[in-house]
Amino acid sequence: MLYAVITKDKEGAFQTRLDNRPAHVEYLKASKEVRMAGPFVNPERTMHGSLIILECDTLDDAKSWAADDPYAQAGLFADVRIEAWNKVIG
View 1: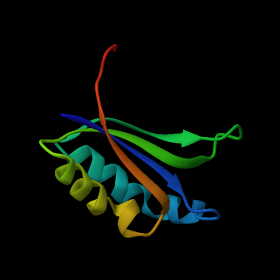
View 2: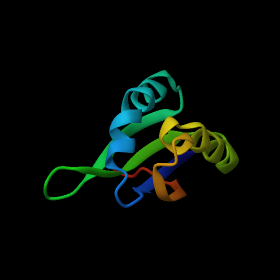
View 3: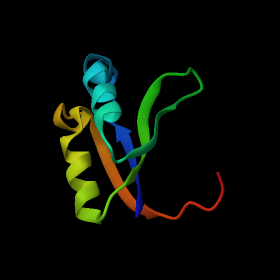
View 4: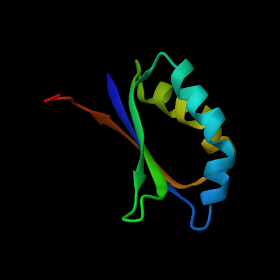
């Protein structure tokens, strides 16, 4: 099943994102669960959250993956939402 991991960064945490980005990107690349991933950007093109599409057996597996993300470990996120997602087009 596919799951969308939708995150919003804490206010003023841009440096935390930058500091942990190499470990986060490496985590994404090494994960067999990741199908798509990328940051949300504001009009100034500054990253402020993420959308990650995972393929996992269960919601608990997706939650565990998200909790192990270096960004989550660094306390970057103000909010994390994980939803089952049904790909229709693309």
